[in-house]
Image 1: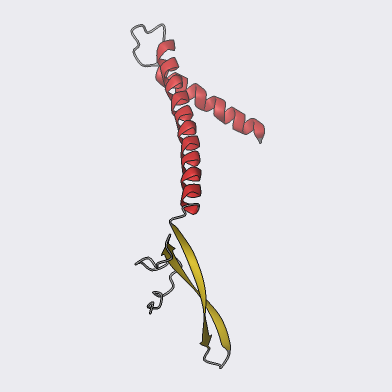
Image 2: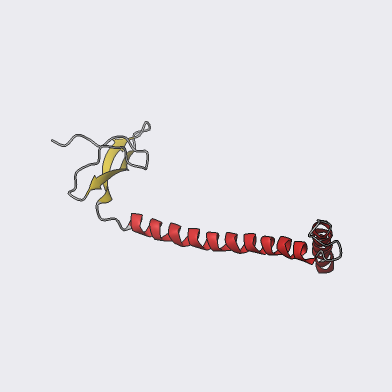
Length: 120
């Protein structure tokens, strides 16, 4: 199985060299510069994508950490007692997004809970 993948890669490389080597590079006897440019371009694309992936992972990790550690907003949970249709009493959690002073933010919590009760 490993030999088949190696042969496939070799055949692909030979096809790439053959296709790019036929291009007119100034001399029909020296197709090397064109093949070198094609292979160099491919290597550059791969290296650029790897570097971009690394930068994206680092930026996403840092951004996620900063959002989680932002002290200006946090969630407050309170429990509401409700009675089910079969008569059981259960505690239902409600999350409220509050600012740094403990005031509810004028938007629904990201958990999909209903709006918080009015403060008296």
